[in-house]
Amino acid sequence: MKQFQYICPTTQQGVLDVINKPGTKIIAGGTNLVDLMKRGVTAPDKLVDINHLPLKSIISTPKGLYIGALALNSAVAEHELVARQYPLLAMALKAGASPQLRNMATVGGNMMQRTRCGYFYDTTMPCNKRAPGSGCGAYEGVNRMHAIFGGSSQCIAVHPSDMCVALAALNAVVIIAGKKGERRLPFTDFHRLPGEHPEMDNHLAANELIVGVEIPNNHFAANSYYLKVRDRQSYAFALVSVAAALDIENGIIRHARLAMGGVAHKPWRLFDAEQALAGKPVSEDSFKQAAQLAMQGAKGYGQNAFKLKLAPATIAEALKHAAGLA
Ligand code: SF4
Image 1 (cartoon, rainbow, N blue to C red):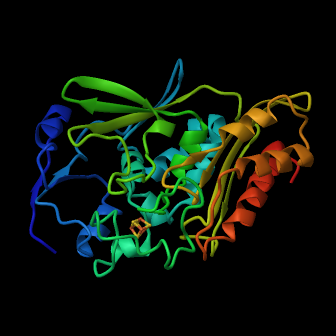
Image 2 (image 1 turned 90 degrees about the vertical axis):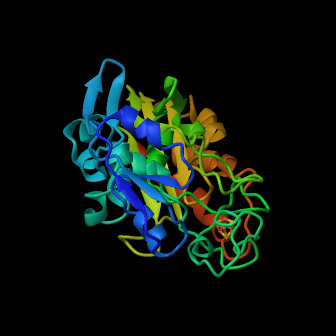
């Protein structure tokens, strides 16, 4: 591993003063970054440890829930407020990684983790995300885990997070600090599609820092479910996952929220299916129709074509669980 400088600023301003330099990376839990450094995928000159910043709080606000960027995944998943009011988030967090990793991984780090595409981690192989212009090994190669939505000829990688799928479904907002102050970004706009620049995973600028996320109040606590389909029951990334949340009154769906993981370069929100469900009775037929609608524009690339059938089945099943029909 290349030698690097390691610094621990104790203030947010101290972090902002140093992160805009080339070759500088932020480290918090390090559960992904250290792997990337050991494999030579990334080789920073300077690591900025942000663990001394006061960004661990999980608090109720008049508008909803605030979670600091350094709150541990395990702390959020086990928090009483989250379990009671945002069970979708707790379920998604508990479906991710392993207990040991969740004890180290932070909310901000979870958002910033890189794809687990094998070509990205193998520095002998072409990968536009790791080495722009080198090609995409997965496009016609080993792509069983890869995207069926939103891919480009440059990259068909997926974002690996479970937590982010739930936060996208819950209309979370990302709070970002920069030299000019704070800005707020809808969670669904934080990550980006690969397009011509797969090396960029999200819309965070080099001189910015995630300080927290906010989840607005909602009426989904009683009817939400995170369903993750994977090759083994723990410590595996999603083949397909679905965050489903329903607001039901007298057997009629007032509002629905749906997002998928394991299918795109970002958490994939199913806006058309959500609209189609609004006003419909709670029934398997409603769920199957919404699931089919959600698949518009899906495309397989060979080994991952099975997801074209797995995805709608998972959407319908997640909705059944959320509605209490499973
Ligand atoms: Fe690299 Fe993306 Fe292609 Fe994977 S899918 S090899 S991450 S460019």
